[in-house]
Image (cartoon, rainbow, N blue to C red; front, side, top):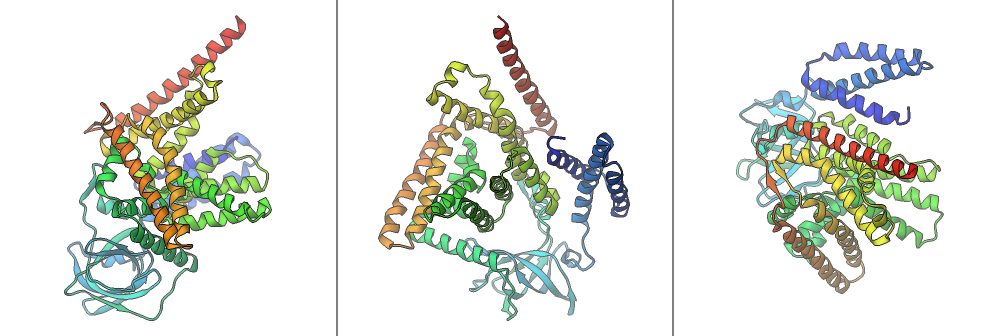
Length: 509
């Protein structure tokens, strides 16, 4: 088989989807998986039977991932969490960087003990803490004793297809703790435990955010923080809504484009030191992992980091790089930790856009006249159009299903915005580097960032005003999305067949 990782990924995803539809016992899955693995070994030399067993083994692994994610330990904090909320004393360790909102701080706590009804019990699991008190010094790795109200997350809608409770459950969070300003209590202990690499990433993120707030306007600081370190909660709502309606909202989420730019900048910087190329690429991989942690390790950045890391490793060991296999490995890495991410709109958009580019952009390019493709300027624009159209075709059904909107203007808007994204990110990196040299240089480079952020806004505003830029499609069902993707595959495959047929006919004539 040419791409075994793609085959395994599809099989695992099929198992995840099946486990979500049908209840399966974990005790039945383990013996079945053992039998299938034995069959793999036994039929190692029989290619047909081997791949049959490989499919069912991967399928069973996918089911095991879902069942395991939903099986909570007897002392999990969810077992102590009442539906309506109750005052408790919770001890645990901060495992995320606190996000500062208008009147509260939000962070994740890895629970250790819980005191309820004058009884202290050992526990485990993540709790989302909402702190309404103004308390300084809460950072990643700190051990805290919190007094507040423990409750299940509310099931209010955050989109047409998802509520807040399910959103958190997909990330392994089943409980929330509200620490009020009046009755709440926060006590610091002396036993702080932190991962040094994560701690360094969080400290740097906090410094970058502080620099952005000091030198940039509130709007520009929010946009730059989102593009560089993945903090999207400070992006102004009007900016966010504008990008949603033009189909360019992905530029705010750290993804493949941002990771690619960072890799390029890192390698260019390392070449200034005349290092051997193997050392350059090895250091680039390490810095790539650190950037993933710095930007919050969201789905899009993890996917991009895995794919870029595989590309660099392939270069180091002189092997061919297969993007589809790299994409499959990235999906397996994410789903192995959080299998229910398969139902998340962000996961679906991130992978469908990249997959459709790999599968369709060359087929779309093949439909253009050869005369135009022979001119460099025309060829560049047509290839950009093909990539943008392929990404839009790959995400249209998902966007319509989850958000009830279709943005035809995204095809041309991305052709203008994506090249500008490179300029914005480079300007941001130069600005942040300039702050370490001179305040005057930082102020000058800050004006540069302001200009390009405003340019992004104005360009999107122009596309937003175009007739037919976007359409609302309320009631867009899953069946419509499935039918749409089937139609896309048939049309593109048929068009590619006609192009080849005409070329072959022309040769014979």
